[in-house]
Length: 121
Image 1: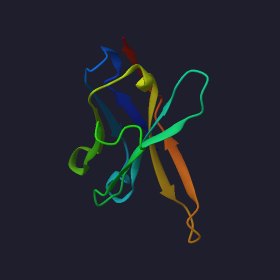
Image 2: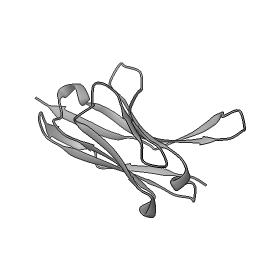
Image 3: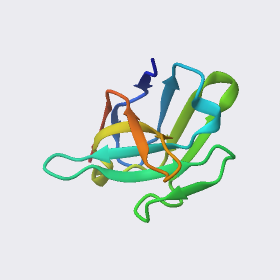
């Protein structure tokens, strides 16, 4: 049974920082990529950052230079360090673990329950 548990959300003022964590149960963490998504009120869920099993990272343009995604395979944990936060970053943040399920590359997505990030002006 694979479970993802986020933590670290909260209320912060504009310009502040937060670090989100996502702990993954099970033994599949180290060999799979991880991703962070967010969903603002009234908007679709969007990809924020992604990290491969080997540590290569990609970011949405809106967060590049402000957010850093990382992972600690020994702790089965992924992190999202968020700096210079703005009100536009407000939303529920979800961690995602996509697992390849067949030779064609189809994936099954595991999701955490989400953690609320609110940035006040």
